[in-house]
Image (tube, rainbow, N blue to C red):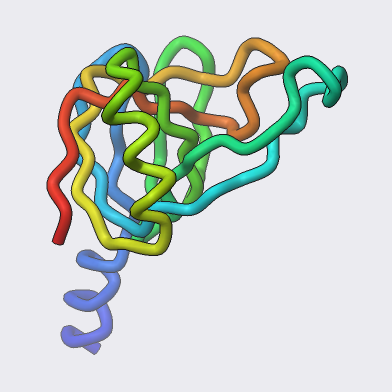
Length: 118
């Protein structure tokens, strides 16, 4: 019984908060944009399929997720992520935020601060 309680303590999803830094790990995955105007704004985006489900909480409400779209203001680094699809990475996010436009394909997004390839 004690072993069951011990295992369940470590299998609970980690909780992060909107508008705060986070470190997440997983594999890079190319995803298709869900934007309604595919001719102009369609195409591929890069996301991270997480090693384990996480919770993201804050004023906007709790979201449980295993897939986070990546946003990067460094165009060269963002482009290089597509070339590394399938690779395991650790991403430092300057913040996590909730989807709020048609360009946002996942429920939670990460503004990339740095990438460490495993």
